[in-house]
Amino acid sequence: MSSTPRSPRRIDREPGSEVLKVLSQLEWVTGRLHAVGRLAAILTLLSFLSTLGIGAFERMFFLRVWGFAIGLIFPLTAIATILQFDLIKRKGDIVFKELSDELQWHVRYGREEMASGSEPNSEFRPELRARIVLREYAYSTTLPLVSSTNGPLVYAAVNASFAFISVMLSILIRI
Image (cartoon, rainbow, N blue to C red; front, top):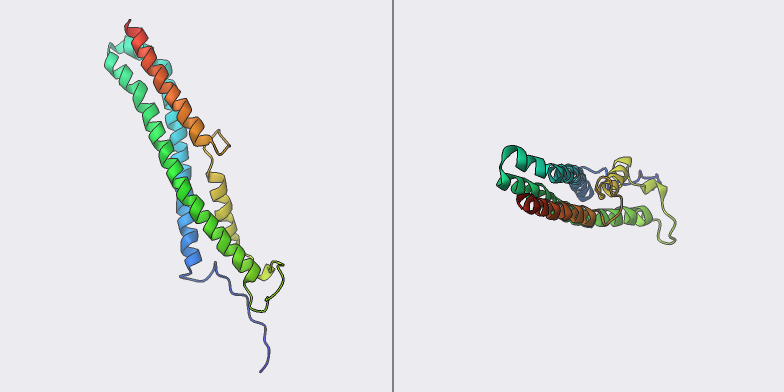
């Protein structure tokens, strides 16, 4: 029997591979995080603007109830969006960690001939697409303008403050 070298088995390239399915799932989660993160930033900006304009809105249109409602709608919607962002991020974290572990395992122990030693095998390096998807997810887990892991908490606190200020302004304007 002749010993011909086999081409490396790429787990992230095989059609129907579980890794490909999970990779697609992580791409979907990344897209959702981008969309929900942008929506949270826009709603926070609208919360700020509605808080600034609450006095003018109530005086111009003589609609005290609407000024109060608008002052609460944007911040509360932003907080709900931030909670959704956090839930999607938690699901994505699980997928991200498992996918990373799976790809790392195949890099280290992919070949049968590699029975000993812990040197990574470059033949089994994941495809560029897999690495890009993992990196994109890592970057999408932060909210716009807040690069820390406490971004959802910061956004929620800011929006809760806007809601409180809006309520106080509505009460003070009526006095």
